[in-house]
Amino acid sequence: MNLSDEQAAFLLDMCELIQYATKQGFKVTGGELARTPEQQVIYFKTGRSKTMNFIHLKRCAMDLNFFKDGKIIWDKETLAPLGHYWEKLHPANRWGGNFKSLVDCPHFERNI
Ligand SMILES: [Zn+2]
Image (cartoon, rainbow, N blue to C red; front, side, top):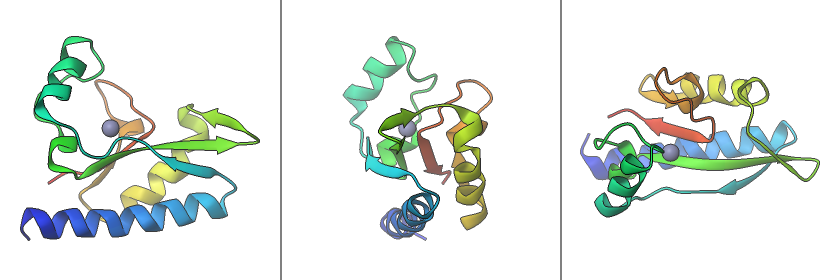
C-alpha cells in the first residue's frame, strides 16, 4: 500500500472509531491530524513529543477530544475501551494510551 492508500484506510478506521465512541455516549471533536516538520520541532523541544519521526507528519495519526456531560475526558481508564476498539480495527493501529514513553490518550495512529 502506498502512503495515500494508508491515509485513506486510516481515515476510514477513524470514522468507525468516532461512530463507536458516539454510541458509547461520548461527544467527539477533532484535534490535530497533519503536522509540519516545523511544528514537530517545537513539540520535540517542549517535551510534548519524544521523537522527530512522528506519524502525524505522514497524516496517519489523529488526536481526538472526547467529552461526556460537557467535560473533556483525558483519563486513560475512561478512554481505554476506545483504545482497545481502535487497536482491534487493524493490526497496525496503535492507541497513545498504551505508549510506554509518553502516554497520549487522545492520540490514535496507524503505525506504518
Ligand atoms: Zn497525536
